[in-house]
Length: 84
Image (cartoon, rainbow, N blue to C red):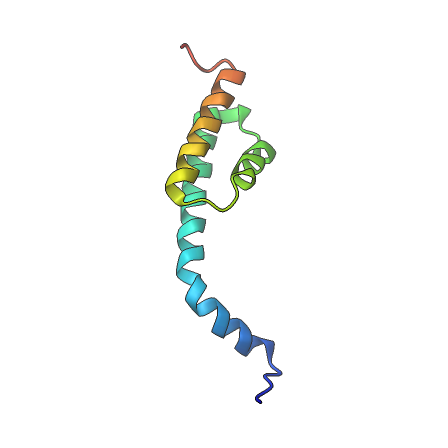
């Protein structure tokens, strides 16, 4: 039985496989942030954005995009930014 005492080795072994997925999700989340922030301007509330993002749970990026678009629509209506 081999005991690994250096946590850096364990971290490298576990993150190597998950790094691409995390990187993609981080990029996608950044794009959602920018889109919502630009659309709402001064009405953008980062706490509400994070609540909506996290409450979605573990979903695919396509589903997350749709959920956040719905959230953005609701925020626009809430702040009177929609004519329809």
